[in-house]
Length: 319
Image (cartoon, rainbow, N blue to C red; front, side, top):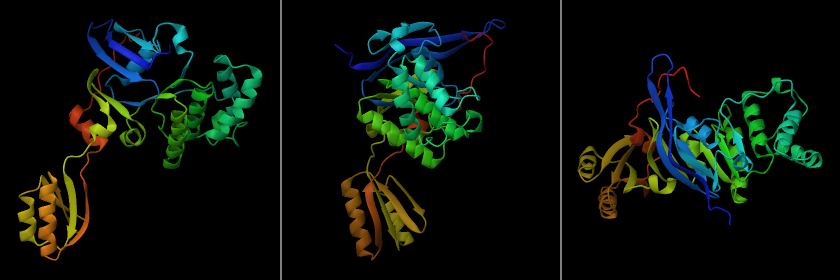
């Protein structure tokens, strides 16, 4: 029976030690998490929080100091565990003498695809990422955004069950980011598990169902995006509010302020917002909007990591 868990990490740890000073850095510190099959999952954290090291341990590009990882129930150290995986690393480098078509043909053959299958699949991939007119142009002439889209095509050409993306929208313009999201949504609908490591919180919030947040190599928060950003209370915006009324309403509000000429209040519950609406109408004020208050993923992220940078000094021996 196929495993219902795509990624399972248990106490995954990586400690780097300097051969000269003897100092150690715990890049990943005892992370345990599960990603269910078919999920869209985002791994977040400041620079240096351990995100890329964690991903490299999943792929056995880095050996863990302690703990273990499994991919679809198979030990991540087993080469066969990587057969159903597509991977787009951050700052990938493709040989510039390749054309886009030639590069995809090369990587598809490494994935075990036969000649006729590659012949059918490569034009599909180039069209999917908007590079069908660039297939026979050398990669050296591609922009950074084009290289990123070509990298995505490389990662999915062999129809993986698990797609691991490290900063997939890096260097891509807003139109390209939307195109990438649409491609990923299409893969999601076919049951592909998508694991994204990114610092673009808005992109993650738009796409991912679940997230985990790292800080200094440790897992500090995990959950469904909808639950983590679920609002508390109601936000009300109105115009024509006198200073006296504004002060009176602010006394019952969780927060109050102004924006573009409108007075804005956040009330903790329905009773408070209804009382405010009655008071505003009685005073002849114009109510612009009333909506449930919600946090953004950025709000959740900053609260979880404390707003501090995680950059840590490198060590000489990082194998």
